[in-house]
Length: 445
Image (cartoon, rainbow, N blue to C red; front, top):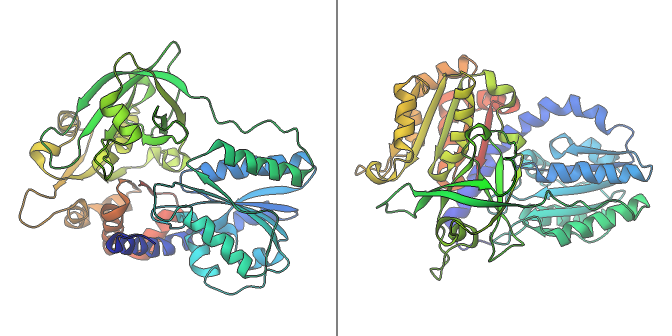
């Protein structure tokens, strides 16, 4: 259990708020997924937030198929009471979000099915739990899922495997077990893309004098190779020298056409005052000649996709501006000017990140609206969700015009506050519909 009750309460409230959204997503996709699971000997069920669990589920299903088994990878949002009652062999790959919460796609399953008593004595299962030991409730949802299945009488095929930030050894153990189930032991390793060598070519402190932690704009270029391709919304994984087995992920703030990869990195401090392994390396320790081990990862759930032709409402705070900047740059490059950015930070004089660029976009018509919230610039704290409420009429108008809403930044405080404001302005049913249509997306941490 966390030792921060207020933080836990905020996470719980956010999870409950997303429960309704996830139910609508499940209901919308139910018919489209039903055909996928019919006739399958095995289901490989993924509860994914950024796509890692989904990718592993697809690989697991492919491995089972090499042994002649009919296997299907499906989202946990498609797994209702009837399908669970009829399934006999299921592999679960479950991410944990925030402080031990279920991912958005699993909120309906966790809130409804896991709250009920089911007879699962016919079911054989295994759980791969993805998590991060830096959080108090490590692999919280995967552990809870494993315990619940056992309590309902299901039989483990093998013990739960916990994966700390993509640990290769744990993933290899899972692959070994799945290969044995498939009757094969010669499948190729599931090695992630290799890290490449990059160098920092520019590093700028974006908030000098801030009361908050320093935030740097870090630009990198690959060493001895072409710049790889990525899309707005994707992530960069950095393997720091002080902790190479545990990469850190950062939203990419630039586009390949710019010739370099840019990040916005907040310098983190541990309780003893020492710098975070990755943020310390990127923000302070790495010199121009040092190699930065980095690889790219697609973040399908935060790419523009079908929303590329819609008006965009981008909402965020702090280093979340990185992900939103990438999306806005992609839209501007494509000639889309119907962009609205709502952004929050502490003080305007110190924390107006990328001020010149954002104001130039607004003045040049590339941002239709730029609304800012600086929480410490007045006696009463004012946050981005408060600005959103003030612009309620405009938001409703944009949504009626077909706008998509993307949220990026802190899970605690901002994301929950924005969700509550959106519910109050649009109504819960309308917001649920936007989520089901893929028009309400978030990347929060």
